[in-house]
Image (tube, rainbow over all chains, first blue to last red):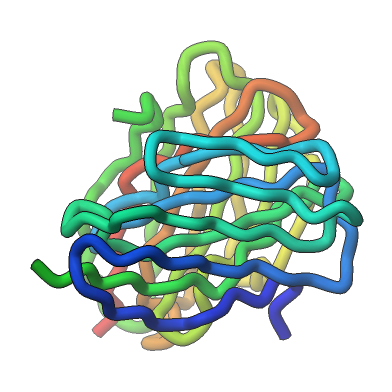
Length: 109
Length: 113
């Protein structure tokens, strides 16, 4: 069983559309990270959120940490083909780092 | 470039064999983490070392072992390899022992035939 559940698992959209990816857990995390991974490459850190309710923006990407620090969302505005990849959330808990199952995003031109 | 270096990039070996994967963390990082990524299991945490000492253990098989050397590089040893061990193995590093964010290497793709 996954400690962190991500939804949707797959998402295929047209360039210019908006989308939201969710990361949910029944556990509380001291911090939560979002990574993007391309095929054959390692995950690349996008953002770390620490405080419940925190919102961080990275250009067209908006990340939110739930008030109870159990869930998070990633919203992409006006998706571009370069956003295509596997998006992973990861939570830190007692020196262990748990990854979600990932959301595979495909942005079509 | 994350600054984390993993070698080799690809490895093909036969069942029953033993291999060693190597990881050099980012300069200044004391923690090294090993992860296994397979198609059906996602990214699974194996083990963490901090400044040479084992810090946390995840779903690491008894056939697998790791260590971190005084120069902080780490090696993951996989023995009695089985077909199911075929996967991408990632190393990540972070500054402290309380993980907040980690930087990943490009991985070693292990194929067991």
